[in-house]
Length: 148
Image 1 (cartoon, rainbow, N blue to C red):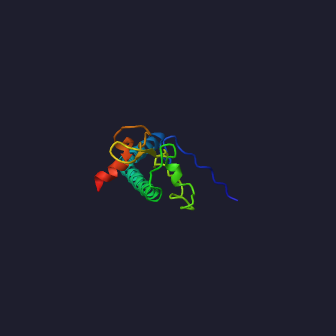
Image 2 (cartoon, rainbow, N blue to C red; image 1 turned 60 degrees about the horizontal axis):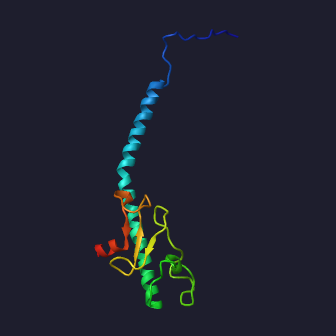
């Protein structure tokens, strides 16, 4: 049986691993990169949500026009868009499966009669309030008419 003495590390011996400062630098760099990616992709997310809102407004307008063709009137403001999702004698499942919320989880507004049209369907954007720019921009069925 041989005896081997333990090796002692000298106070100046290097050990493998990272220092706290090195780890902090790496974490800060990762944070900066994540922030840059988030800012770069935010505009795509906003435009995607606005496209979905326009598509849903278009779908609601088609249901309103079908309602008008069958009943010879548009829903009143009191009936609102909810009447489009209710079953009736003519439409057992309703004209819409359900009344959709806009991509920001706010209800679409329905105005009858509108200023320049028989009705207007409005999404008030991310802030849910009238007016705004960027993600907060209002989208309306009148915007659909302008784009065609």
